[in-house]
Length: 383
Image 1 (spheres, rainbow, N blue to C red):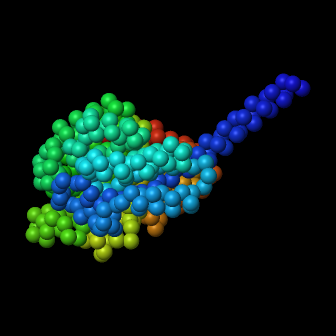
Image 2: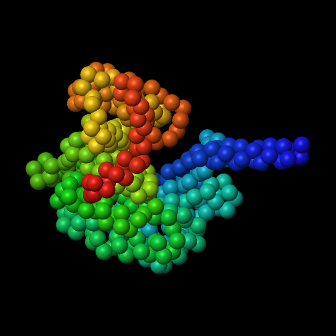
Image 3: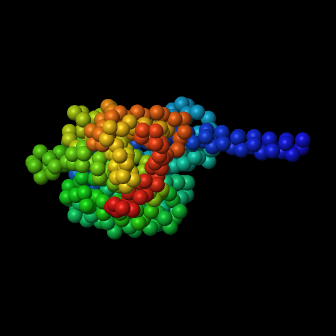
């Protein structure tokens, strides 16, 4: 009887731990925008006021108000992060950095938030700055790398070289911060090879996370002028999707989270509003993931010499994967029929949350492990 009670108690402990972890996976971000605040350069692609939708410098009072307003809407026992976006935070005068950081620092000490994140330029990092950030309990620093090709950096008027990226990365690692890298595809002077070379070099630096942003042409920027003059041509949507897919798979195969693919749509960041050209799509990441799935499925079918013509294909997968397999407006499903001659393609959702997809072709079952397929694809097609 005692043994049974002991086993039940252990089971309840595991259940409670599972429920707690499940609850704590709710990750909320409180964004604080500091538009063009402290940034010493006007990059050709940037109109920070358009990107953030703001035109005034943030104040301490605004930071406190924004945090309080967000906290009032969050569920209890959530993981909450304050993130300073836009501009170049560590290029701000130290006195102002301290004033702004003091607010989330107080909330963190009171355990009302859990993380503090900021983004900055690679040439705005040194030991003094990092010591200051440590004092205010900053956790994560994201570097706007954009490119590691010096010609691209120069033509984009970034104002720094690739060596600034390597040195700032080394220092951030030395001080024990979590490190994020942001890269942009299709900048002036860029090419698919240069973008992939940048991604390859970043892989070697092994950041904790990465963001991938295809370059958009924003109103009232130098890049818009260059496009109008004919000296700059933005990437097509297909080009941006295909290059992003290769980079996404490369980082996924190394278990490095890709936390964003494509600029987040806002009221102003829409084609025909502040976006005048470039590979904009409100669901850009989904387009990339759909393309990845087509690549992986093609590799799997070819490698296993699977007969497809006139067959019925059934997918059984996590309900989080059904839209990726079907494609927007069913385009992936249509391509499977057109490219492989399937008679019919059905997709059956499952409550399982894994990354495996069961395929049934005329009653013959197979399981595709997408994680393993990505590793295999990257191994055979390195960037």
